[in-house]
Length: 73
Image (cartoon, rainbow, N blue to C red):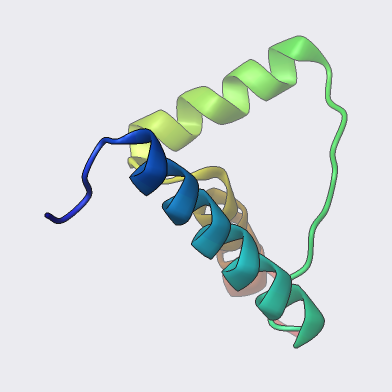
């Protein structure tokens, strides 16, 4: 059964996700960053993410792409 909602299935998916994240970090394919923002800034960022229909990492990527596109060297 795909995506069963039993406790065992939930734990198995969490373990698999943890292992994948650990592997990606070890391989240098991803990095973790921690941000502390003023509440109003964080809420605005989340509102923009919702408007774009993307998660925070994708919104940050979009912001970087927009910056590079408008500030070409």
